Length: 276
Image 1 (cartoon, one colour):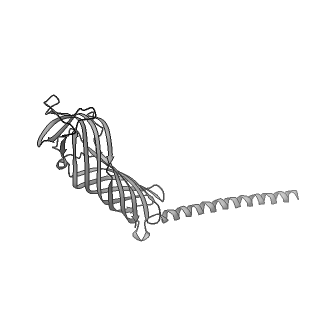
Image 2 (tube, rainbow, N blue to C red):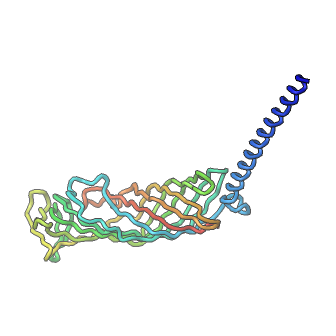
């Protein structure tokens, strides 16, 4: 009788263990199926065989700057992105569950306004109808505006069913561009140009009669750089996105030397995208 009871207890324990194992297996299976359903739910439309289209619209902020800041720029008094806009289309293709590629055509406006105190800043200026080149000390006001198109060619990685990372090179061309401003004395009343060299003739410039410059025609037609971006799938057809375009080529034409250093456009965009 004792032996029989022991056998019954052992069978019951084994039965309970099997129940636990089956419950765990069922839970894992349900979780796996749910995760798989989630990947399919937020993935490309099946009918397009892993491909899709994104129509984007966003708000752009940033500026065009030397990197690193040269010693001629002593302080930044104001940096005010004018704001901008980007609209465009991306086509993408998924090669597997996580990896894919995309290509886009983005039309943009980018602009900024800045004020800086500079010393021995190499420039070409126009004052009272005369053009002078030399080294300026005082306050420099700059306005930049650029209209153009960017073509990014990116690798895409699905971090999760709803989060996408994209990164890769881009090429931009400008339809219209502006880089202009004026210079005058700073808050301490110091404002002058040394003509031709740092010890040349001194020409005083004050805010009542500022000197101006316009280097728009000296900006290079093309710019190349790197883009990194994130997309979050907010609902079935709508993404929220953010991206950063970091220019890696000088905005000036190769033979332009009125400004002594290279400058690069760096702009970020946030916005919404409709997903087909």
